[in-house]
Length: 138
Image 1 (cartoon, one colour):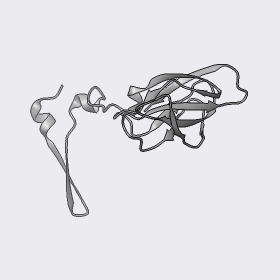
Image 2 (cartoon, helix red, strand yellow; image 1 turned 180 degrees about the horizontal axis):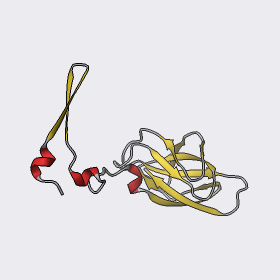
Image 3 (cartoon, rainbow, N blue to C red; image 1 turned 180 degrees about the vertical axis):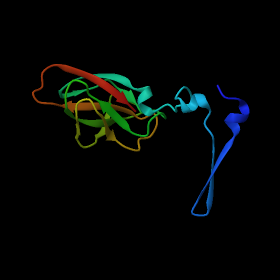
């Protein structure tokens, strides 16, 4: 690990007459050992749902993510977010439009969501047979 002086050393660059300064990375940071910011996906949870119009269990948006994202390791599907009332989460308020969610890829299915908002995700996949699972980051 670098010394405190090395960590606090400033790097200065001149670009088109503008001086830009940034803290220099310590050797351990440069080697990827420390300092990586947590991403939205670090707070993912599991889902299970019937693929023919079934819903996930009730989920809530968090301050970790600005959007609702799903990851389906089983196969591509079509999904939509349905928001629920905060007072009575069993009551649906409305559902957003369907989005294609390719297999093995994070897909944003709702954007700029308010923290603490209850929601469920509905899936449609053909052929629909059984219950599938994956990950949600919200």
